[in-house]
Image 1 (cartoon, one colour):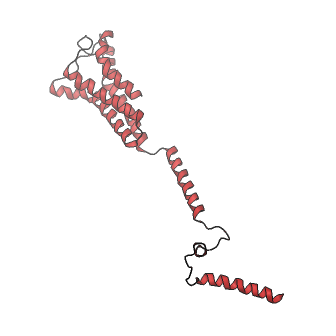
Image 2 (tube, helix red, strand yellow):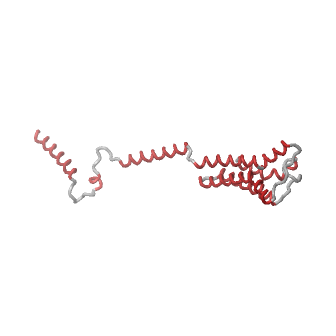
Image 3 (cartoon, one colour):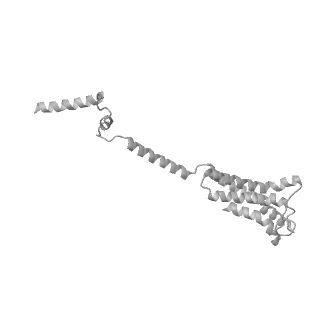
Length: 197
């Protein structure tokens, strides 16, 4: 949300700021040039779209793309003016009668704004780049619940008949040795009881 608002600020203030004597020369509102397209509109649009993606993304990869897009917009706000000087372009001189006024214009509309956008985008990227403690605990609890349920399903009940007797897999086949041993011992015990009586 904050990234989107900062993108709107950076994209609109250079055009409406001259109403309040806050912006870049010439002192006329809605003054459009190609340099303003490259140095103001494009980074503002990147920041706004990146902020919206971060707000509404349901996928971690998509959210990280939004964070990188916003970070790129912020970096362009910071470095765009310096790079534009290489082709002889720029936004123009900042409006203001005092040094403090002109510094405030430059910081709030280009370099300072871009640094703030880049910092917030970096925080968002850090949040999506690692698994949060809450998500990790939720995943561990789900894994533990699944393991416990699997163990309960797989464990035979106490006193239940062996698997080969319940399923009838050995019907018509020799009885396993451990089955014969168990059966013979129970038959011997029953015979001894009969002999005693």
